[in-house]
Amino acid sequence: MKRSACALARSYHARLHLVAIVVAGVTILGGCDREQRRFQEPSPASAPAQSLSLSELQAGPQTPQPLSADPYGGNAYAVSEGKRLYGWYNCEGCHAKGGGGIGPPLMDANWIYGAEPANIFATIVQGRPNGMPSFRGRIPEYQVWQLVAYVRSMSGLLRKDVAPSRDDHIQAKKPEQSQDEQKPRASSTPPASTQSQ
Image (cartoon, rainbow, N blue to C red; front, top):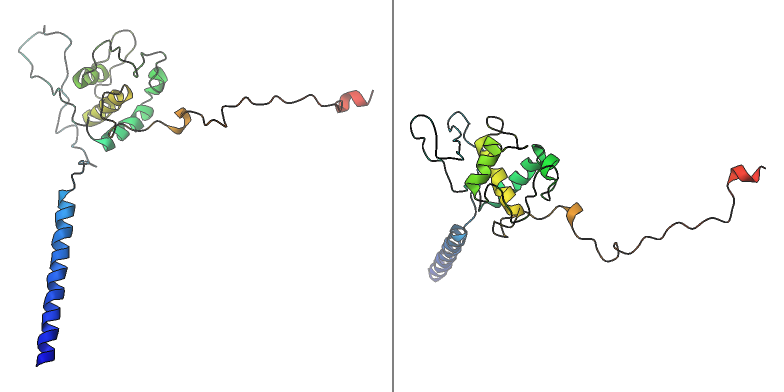
C-alpha cells in the first residue's frame, strides 16, 4: 500500500509538472506579437479601387474620401512583396533601382506630388503628366498598396525592421574586390601570324 501511494504521488507531481510546462509554453507563444500576413487578398470586384483627386473641384456630387493610411507600411512581408512587384511591373524601366532614370528618383527626399501613402497611391493609379502612366484597372488595389510601401521604404520613410535589405548587386564591394585589377602584360612571344613570315 505504501508503494502505490508513493507511485501515485510521483505520477501526480509528474502530471502537475507537465501541465505547468504546457501552460508556460502557451503563455510564451501567446505573448509573441507577429505581423499578420494575408496570403489571399479579397477579389477586386468585392473592394472597388477608390481614386484620389488632385483638386477639390469636380463635377457632380462629392465623392467619398479615400483611405489615406498605408495598410502595409508596417508589414515586412508586404514590403518585400512590393519589392518583387516593383521588378515584376517593370518600374525599374523608368525609375531604375530607385535612383531615377527616365522617371524621377525614389530614394531622395524631393517628392513632386508628395511622399504620403495616399499621394503615391494616386500617382500609381492615376498617373502623372509628362510620363507616369496610369495603372488603374491593371494592378489590383492591394498590390498598389504593397508597391506604395516598398517605394516609401526606398527613401527611408519606413521603420528599418520593416524595410527590405538591398540586393546583393547593390552591396558595397569588399576591400579585396576594390583593389585595382592588374592589366594583362604584353607577351614576349610573337603571335603565330608573325612567326611564319
